[in-house]
Length: 227
Ligand SMILES: [Zn+2]
Image (cartoon, rainbow, N blue to C red):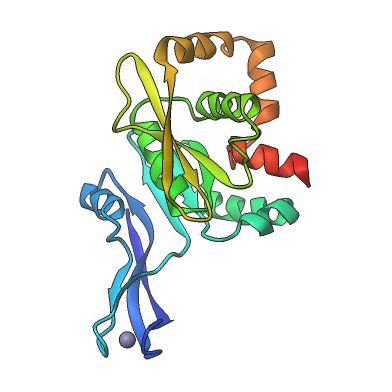
């Protein structure tokens, strides 16, 4: 089930007060069109009735794909709060979790803070890739090249579109300009090797320790270490 509610918002251009129906959660099995809207940057998009200005409202959103047993919580702009106030943050996520019907198997819960992260994670899961192993790959990419790939300034994003049977593709995004700067590749066979390596208790424990979740992010790991 997808849920939407009416919210009072203000037009960023003419400051008119608007009442808009916005999605709080989307179920992409019931309503695949909502997934497409999200990908097309049209979900929770608003057109001001006074001045005609079109804009997107970034708000908390629960992305639910029951076929894959996956839920992604998007909390826009809450990254700093998460870092400084993790426990309270996770409690509010628990509250969301317990609001689900009993018969619903608790799936892997993913937490993301930006729209880019949300879209990347959806593509990753749809490509049947393991998010922790992918973030581990990014972790290695950062570690080997910290001068060029400063985690404070550069994001590494999985690129589903250009990935092939042979290689997984990643793009580097400069976080100041938001421009995409370069492409990195990682052999799919090496990814499969990592997947196999981490599939034993001791190694899995190590991976879980690196990325306990729910915000699984190599970049976040470096930023936390720097604080
Ligand atoms: Zn307006």
